[in-house]
Length: 362
Image 1 (cartoon, rainbow, N blue to C red):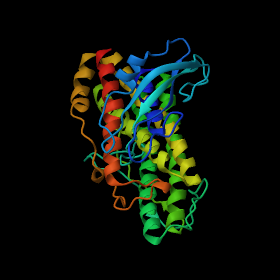
Image 2 (tube, rainbow, N blue to C red):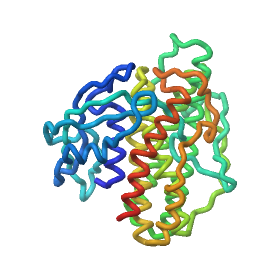
Image 3 (cartoon, rainbow, N blue to C red):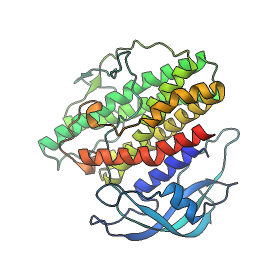
Image 4 (cartoon, one colour):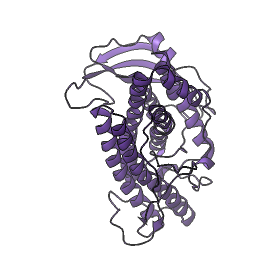
C-alpha cells in the first residue's frame, strides 16, 4: 500500500468513524475502536506511530477533529477498507485495530466532485442541461415527499452541479489517457485512466438521477465544448496530475465521505458510497502518475511540483460551479458552507500535504 493510499484510507475511515460514528454533538470525548488496513506482510503501527501519522493533533470541536490511539487491540485477517486489485500481483490486506478516544469530526462538502476538464483560460468546461426525457437516469430515486420547495430546489442545484462536473470528468480522463499514451506511460496507468472515465460516466448518471428527482423533471446534459489537446510534456503532465488529481480527487473522496456521514436517504447513500470508493481510486491513480513522472523526470519534476503543494490553500466554494450552499439538507447530502471549508482544510492537512512530503522525500 502506498503512502498516499494509507493516508487517504485512514482519513476516510476517520470521517466515517472507523467502526464507530464519532462522538456526540456537544463534542464530548468518547472512546471506541478504530481499525485501518495494512498489507499482510507489514507490521501493525505502534500506538505512537498512529498518533504521529494517522491521528495528528488538530483543532478540537468547532474547528476540526482530534482522535488519538490509546491501546493496540488486535490484528484481523481481513481489511475494513479494500484497496487492492484482483489482477496479477494483487496484495492481501489485514487490519489493525486500536482503542481510541476522539471528539466529533467537522463534516462538509465543497470541492469539485470528480476531475472536470479545464479550458485553456482555466475555467471549467461543463455541459449545458436540458429538461427533456433522459436516458441518463440510472439508479434509485431519493425520497422527496418530506422536503419543502426550497430544499428540493437547493438539492436539485447541488446534484445537478455534481452531475455536470462528473460528466466533464469523463473528458478529463480521456485526455489523461491520450497524454499517458503520448508519453509512453506503463499499462497500469493507462488502464486506470480508462477505468476512471467509465466510473465518472456512472457517477454522472447517478447524480442526474438525484437532480431530476429533486427538480421534479428529467434532466439531461447537452453538448460539451471540448478544445483540449493531449499533454506531451512530462513536467506539464505532472503539474496537471498534481492539481486536478492528487489534490482535487483526494478532496473529492473526502468530501463524499463527509457527506455520507450525515446522509440518511438510501438513494443518496448508495450514490455516495460508490463515489467514495471510485474517487479514492482516482486519487491514487493521480499519485501513481506523479510517482511515475518523478521516476522519469527526477528533480526537474519535483521542482515544478513544489510550488503547487507548498502554496495550497483551502478552496472556497465560490471557486467551483455555483450551488445553493445557503441551505443545508444533510440527510440528502447537502451540508453548510462552514462545514465545507473545515472538511477541505482537514483533507489538505492530513492527507495531501503528508503524501506530497513523502513523495518529495522518496
